Image 1 (tube, rainbow, N blue to C red):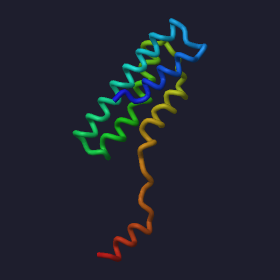
Image 2: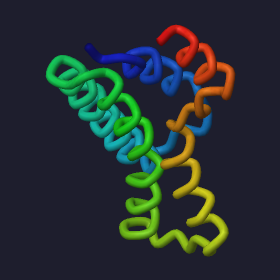
Image 3: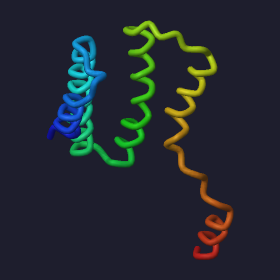
Image 4: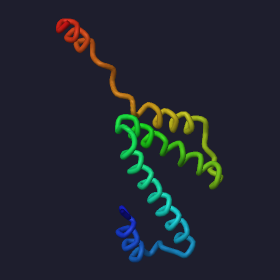
Length: 109
């Protein structure tokens, strides 16, 4: 149920980069990740995998971008925005069937 959180917690104890300022970000990140995992598992139980998976995979970069812009004040160029949108929406499309698929289907009719 906790995913990678226990291992990540153990690893951060031995890293010299861990400071008090980082702890709040680590805890927030772990909470968000756990929420995402619970949401994803619930969606898989209710919805069809072919519909849930593309939505879940495509919205991650969009949500991360909106949080970065809105809460963290990150400045993103137009090129970066276009890239994020293309990655989010186009990575889930499969190749169109080849012409031979249509010819094969016609011959079977």
